[in-house]
Length: 411
Image (cartoon, rainbow, N blue to C red; front, side):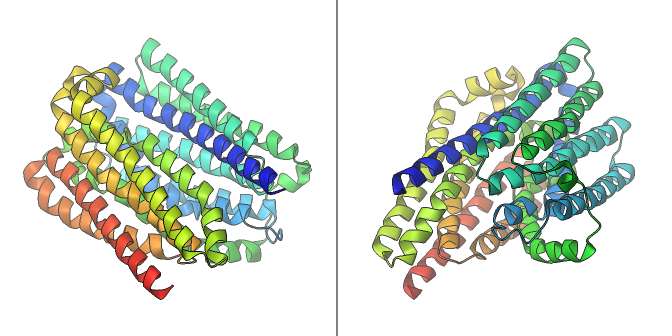
């Protein structure tokens, strides 16, 4: 029985990791293609990605997590879908207002709106993912993410390369995300749900309860997204705004590493919690150390590759114009190495029921990032942004270590 459970966990982890990696790789490929075939639009794309991410993430309220953990079926699918639809309409209203008020050209405004729409459709699709995750049917989620990513990037590539038009390419990307909702609905119906159960409801009492429960998670997600994007915002408002595209593209290279770490620490969370519940503190500390070293080790490996092959890597993945920024890549990876290790410690603390650990460490990182970006970017530009990433990651890791030390003392 225990062996079957372990196999199930490994299978679910493999499905989750595969789907996340393929979709993330396709998102990165979108940025890479723009650097090669429409470099003049790179800044607009990076700004659209940076501006839309925190808003969409906040309005998500991490409802998928609440849905997946709802073992007692307290919330109906229709309630969750209704809240998703309302929340994403609000997010699009916020982002549309930003595009109208602050976008300095129509191309940027269009880019923001289309990227926001695609992310809103993805968020709505997560309602179907949550139902499948609750039933431990991670294969369906992986299939959806993989197909969605591959079809989206194929459509995007055709219009960008053959037509030379970023707007048409983004419209194609967004259209695939919309059409994939049909596939996601079908996968959920295969779980045994009737079509009527998939329809939105008007149960405002249930939706209010979900908002109340999801708001802290939404704020946490907002801070995590801000931690990634604050340097881009600072560059956007500085005299170095023309380099925001370059920095954003370099920063995007770390996305796949983040996905690997996130999938790994989530998969080991239940095991850490069980070991601690059994009172085996030494074993818990051993597993935590192993997880932290492996997470940080991935960053160190990336750092070594960037140190030796940084210029060639940037030239191959993007263009020769990126080669002078190899030093920027090194500093970004240093910051992400700190973040990878901190993420492992945070999940270990969460397994020990210190649910607020990640919120505390992320908050410290955001504060340091804000201060460092305000101080360094106006005088050092893209180099200052990279240093800010490293300082923010260091602050997150330091806070996580202090919280871990306090946790061990209390144990």
